[in-house]
Length: 289
Image (cartoon, rainbow, N blue to C red):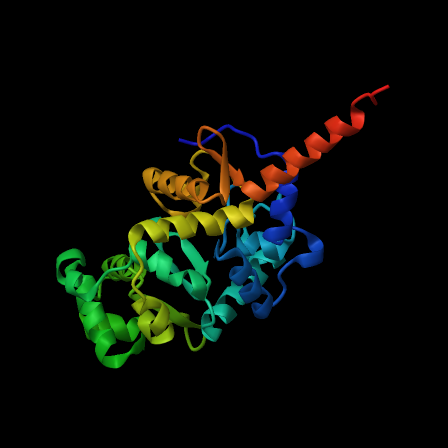
């Protein structure tokens, strides 16, 4: 259920700065995008102002009200976002894939262990949790390490396009397989590879689930300034109960303050506002005679 609660103007200003929603700090290159993802911790790829959270497309536009046009092929900002996305994938410095709920996301290396703790899959669980087409694709990739879409379909025997796409999405969601490059000549194709090949240390790090939920919540709140009911879950793909557990853990350690049911704000911002208000009360008080 979507919240009707408004984001305060000062929080929107804070997000403009943290999520590069302003012209002076907009993303123009792959290196800019990598720095943006590292600061934000994670970001969607092609969402616009109608979806909450940090977004590469919005950062390329450099404005908070950016809306993706219907005809994206002729839109220079959408085209640049697509080019930057492809460059970032090839450079391999940040994680990219379709993660929870099929969201195409970038994840900073420092956040990979926490995302993997929630959505990743141990090898011992693959036979039980992965579908047969996904297992067939994974078997080929573990032998060949990387392969283009058409070759992977042929080698795995998953020749049906729809079944292959579903299986690849399943492997991406489990953070097992990721794209390593996008080619356009002689024809458009993705090159697929094992995620552990690019981020071995991060993906082999063991993190407890409660710690992962807390750190994902911390990462979002640090960039958002505050979160309203349902926002953390929509942005990250966490369940609403998990999002609540993460936010309450931040309150327990003093990182966040609960300002209303389902609403959490950075404790430092709340304290600064309260100090400012208290100072104003003192200044306005009549002097003792």
